[in-house]
Image (cartoon, one colour):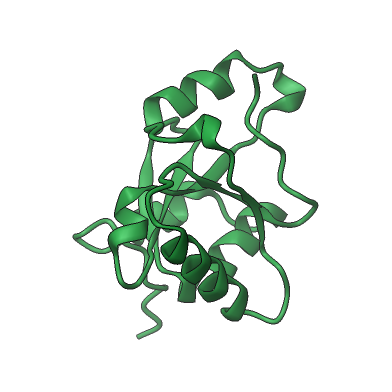
Length: 140
């Protein structure tokens, strides 16, 4: 079964940790507050509970090409426990399985540029800090 499709000009935010409903709502509020325009298609389906990157890659690889998506953001256990709620961005297309974290503050920039094809996944992943988190581009 393919992964859900995001709404037009938004990115899929897939919940894989269902232990903390308050954290899920806090994450959604933080993402929605980060920009005046919607950037996320939220999917909270228990069928994805506990799924890691490899099973998500396998599901996407088994889908018909026209049903595949090129990236997604995962709200995993790390996201839910993190006070900042940094999402796990996952490349599904160019370098399947490559990841980086993105805090809600930077999510609209990453989502918009990926959904429009202005930038590719690697550009953001390459700009992640030593901890693997994208915190914007250094303008200095």
